[in-house]
Length: 561
Picture 1: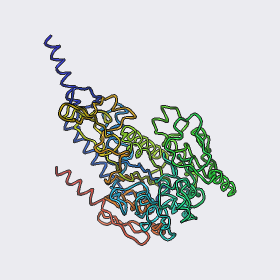
Picture 2: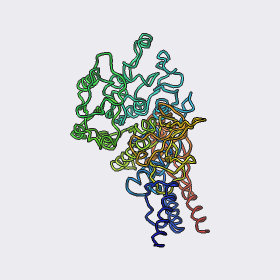
Picture 3: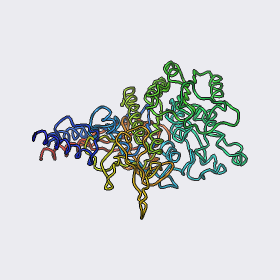
Picture 4: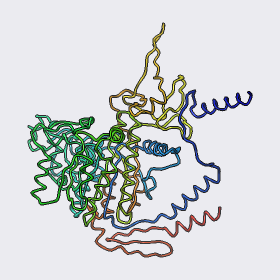
């Protein structure tokens, strides 16, 4: 009996140690003893990997930019743990595919006029190389938000997509949002208001003031670089067709639709006619089934609009059996089509619904979307060669989600952390503001008492649970944090410190020999080595590196210890 009682006490102590409170929390266990030998060996292996990193100074034939919309550093940490726990591991010890890239840096995300940015100003920065104002696209900071009369030709800025097209490369955008949304629109559009996705969102007063004003959808099908994009994949069909109807057998199709056209036009038909008149091989599709049937080796231009509004969340595609491709499947098709060109390509892939989940304080969905983008990165890595393909993974801005509460190692990241001093449980993931501001009020004889909700692990880990938030808002705000940049392939070492966000476009263009720095590729680089110091001269510029000296010094220091 004493043994049974002792065992019961130990079980109770384990429950309290895992959760910090009298409720059971799922926990993933470590698979090996992490003693001093484990950590020393792990550090030595990482050191050897660092010492073995060499600069890849090849020209990038291809450039792929993965943009996790709202993928803050806490989102990366939580997604890494979530990914591991989906595979029955603790998660903390693992990594996302792109976290193993050879080089990384940080990006300052502020807009010219805002400390905390939006996706239009940031999209313009990392795609055109010029920072601009909040909620404006494709103009420098002389533009005034929502004022079409400040949209002048000489303050337009053009994206790396156009630079790539000018160099004869194929170009494409893949997104889980509407293809007219802020991030994809920043590759091709010029507007004073990011919400002008179709003419239905432009006021009659604006049209009177600026009769030549074109909505973003029209710019995509009528102007370059939009019309010359080889691959356009995402949602937003409702912005192109006045008579758009829901897709059959898709209960989510009208979700997140923005505006309806009021000009009576079908811009998809216009796109098809112009492509037909150009004599190029082209196709318009609306489902995964149709996408699977596209011949990647022969198609030159593909327009794919898989939903009226934003595309469904990844977990919805799977649980509802929707005929809608995942982000990884779209990425694979896009790369196969773009790779058929002789001169290489530029591709933007946006995991856009990370941001939407954060705005609704739906942390579970945000992490799932981040892992879905990681799967797309893995697919791109399997289809390309780092010798000629630069891959950059970054975010446009942060969010207000935090990771806190002293949960134990391996504790379920989307669940409960522990008990608060008020005797109620709280989650590991919470937000500074948003719709998750939930509370109850208890009235006694003398005063009102405000109390948090008594949530359970089952509720907290659901897809529709809104995390706790400190300040009530209908939509959670962005964060002003710096965000990470991960890079692999040719010239990836250009990302190495804290950068202004607009630097990203310039570094990618330099790697691919397009845009303002294309002249540096005219001369073949020559390398001289003297006393372990490499000096590379190309296009009139000289860059010195010290791999021999650094490795020798580090090796000597290691041997002394």
